[in-house]
Length: 334
Figure 1: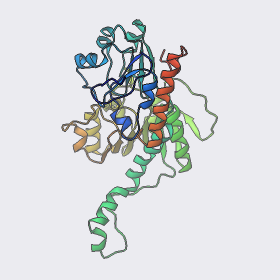
Figure 2 (figure 1 turned 135 degrees about the vertical axis):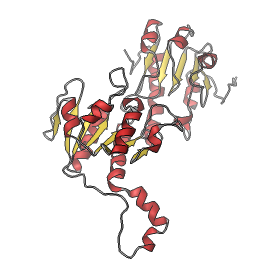
Figure 3 (figure 1 turned 90 degrees about the vertical axis):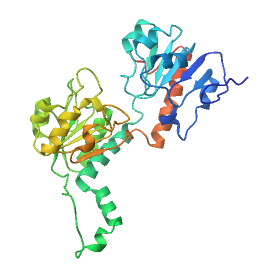
Figure 4 (figure 1 turned 60 degrees about the vertical axis):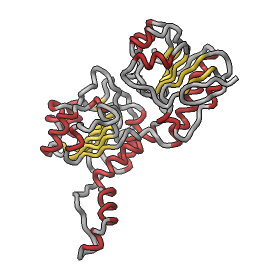
């Protein structure tokens, strides 16, 4: 039989109950029919964030929960005693209380390395927009500005070469390493700071201390997870150690930067530009100070979202679940 759920119909397979709490962002042009072969599935486009009662109601008696951004805190996990598996549809696992999951015998998996190329590519897209101003000048040409000037050229914002500039990477995981390769191709000097020393073989990459990176970098790009050690990592104190006129990039997590301090630095010219794909509260609120900051470029958390990347995420999500059901979990967060 086909069982009806709130948002969608999926034909169930075995008896195992599966709930997908927020598939919309991943699933605009894909489908989840493969879940129907693994269990009795309830699919929801969205689940209200901040409403644990609603989250628990949707989880119901499900043993398996898949989440992208819907948080599963200690209260939710504790009050869902039948829960045995949480599949996070992404790399970051700050949406799940991992300690509570472990205490309650719940296996948690995530998806690693699915978006390395996409996020590295987008990081450089942000940087190239800042230094090349393609979007602005395309807009001005279409508005008639070029047709109205007496010269063969004009520019409304400063343009910069990347060659010879120093890129500082905070964090040196897979994405940062890919960004480093792109920067090297543009003849940039590449340095990085990592909380644990990394062995590198490339002679053109240099590992430095956090303060050294702040002092030396013309461009700083963030590539660390969100944790108690990294929240507000970029604040008035760290900004004060940076070169005046630095460019700051963030395709990691919004809470890595103190938005009030960065806004102040942007408006004072200490930071030349911020280009970020993430903010502290998403979707962005109308009172976010960055919206009124000078030279601030904001995109709506789309670095991860190319079609190829989302297909990969979907495939790994299914593989993670299949492996768990077979008694051999992969990509488990310990």
